[in-house]
Image (tube, rainbow, N blue to C red; front, top):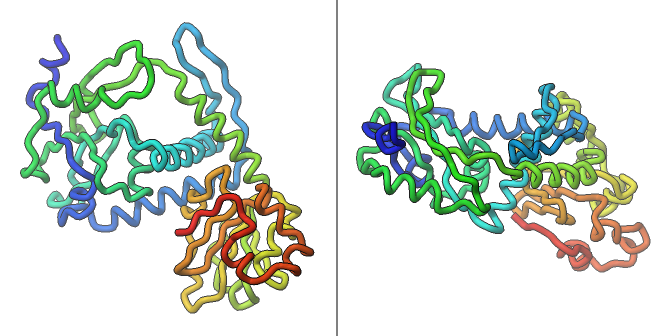
Length: 327
């Protein structure tokens, strides 16, 4: 049977994230669930050893990565998500994730998305709030009647034109989801895409040799008990936050959470995804939360003598940093 024949009668649509996220029919609490999923990926990465073994498989034109344990899988997932988030910001999404619009079990008038292939591409688009990007989804229950079903030719062009590698050819098939919904998908054949993720993981391992949180006083310490209950180390600052990289011997990543009335709410673990491997510091201007890449060239400038000699503008405006991200 030809791919075009398989495609018939499946309502594949090309829908922007903006319309999906703003839909009145999006499952209640789904956005919160997605953020909780991202935070779970982050905490598992921090807790586990950051090394993966792999082998090249020339006959299959791909890389085999040892991910037999859940901890190995968790580390790979963080490295993949982190790489995609920052690659998308630099280079764009290239080609859309594919999936299906599924009906909620508890309320058939609401939907959620199940995305595959491209699950982590979807997470990265969501995290980056790239609302103008599109997803290719099977709208089986017609939650988006304003969008017409793609012809096979339109679908094929959308799902193939954005590939960035020379390809040996793609294949297409009907996939059946766990709940029984069917969707038409295009898969890329064997490639060495995971090499980029493995190299990103190597750099992340250097950056995240340790992870600590700093705050202002004992009251703050007590109010951050949710973070400490997850096994994260929380310390009090010495003088001011600029001393943090030196206090950590210019190693690892540290987050400074300043005193505020709502201190429990101003930092969540998914925020560490903002720190790219070559960034010195990420500063959230609305809250003062600061993420230090303690081992970076910029942070290594913050020795006590330089701090004591510097004017406030030099420190507060990050004139010491090579690369700063202000959010």
